[in-house]
Image (cartoon, rainbow, N blue to C red):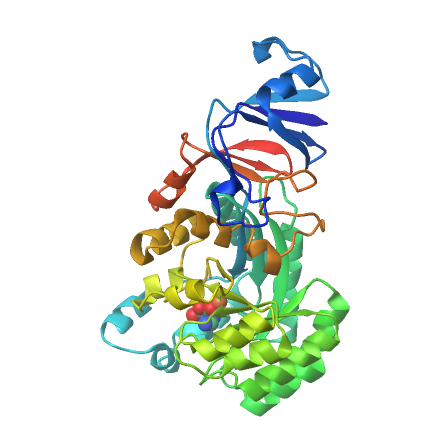
Length: 418
Ligand code: NIG
Ligand code: FE
């Protein structure tokens, strides 16, 4: 099946070596040819018309194997990649807003019976059908704001059986029509379950949970909440190394509330991405850069928690690569990457092109497409995942935090109206 998208407006393609550069944008007038879900060419619409003998009025064109879609000058950006999301959990944590406003910390809220522990009990109690339904609705929500691929962590089961169940549900959701593709991460080391001895739980992660996860074969990566008060750098290292030995890629949560040495560990281990990284000192950031470790900022979390914004200046100054992701979780209830980008552009002065690169071409380095093909950029041979902006200016994506800036999304070559 061939689909031809004609008359694009400005198109951010990110196919040149220097992503955050004006060379990453084609002027209006291009056409995109897609065959079986893959981009085969991006050339001037006039050249496409000639090659495929299209009439001036494409509505008159008739060929069962070729579908023509006129973009009418709407701007195009690549499909967005959410490299950090806690997709599957049940329940509600809104009572914690008042606790936070009374000055309670994340750790205190956890001790008061809220936090991850609360969501763990609600998730364990939820039926598989309910979790499937929640997951499906969330994925549809993510697609509505342009996400075409999403990383989904477990971590609200914290027993072998319930962690495997969350991975199985993610696998069932993966590939449903009109939803982003999913890659799964096992995060048994998200917290120590209530009522369980800490050392016993960590032993069980090694002796029981990890081997079962490996045998199940759904998770691509392992993640650990490496943070003072949760998992120490030593504990994190052991779990990450064991996962890696079993064939999993490594990801980390680091320095969300305090510098706990997670940045140095991320660099030592060469993990794919170390996220939050809010309190990571510049020396550790430099080590991460040297080791090829991505920094994944999650601006929705400080937004929801009332924390300061990430300081991007030193990263831009030292050319340290970073990405943005949603961190969707019960405390940070957004899957919208346009919202996340708008926070960074409008609150932190980041250039719109750098913000867009952080959720597309740069995000693709730490979060690959399941097909093994390129994504996050629009070029020959890449997956045909792209978003059609509701207007001629791609930058408007950064200015619309409360609604989807997209009139449509093309997912694996197929047009979906938004
Ligand atoms: O990345 N910080 C650890 N995990 C999540 C939050 C989990 C929760 O509060 O339920 C995060 O922000
Ligand atoms: Fe997270």
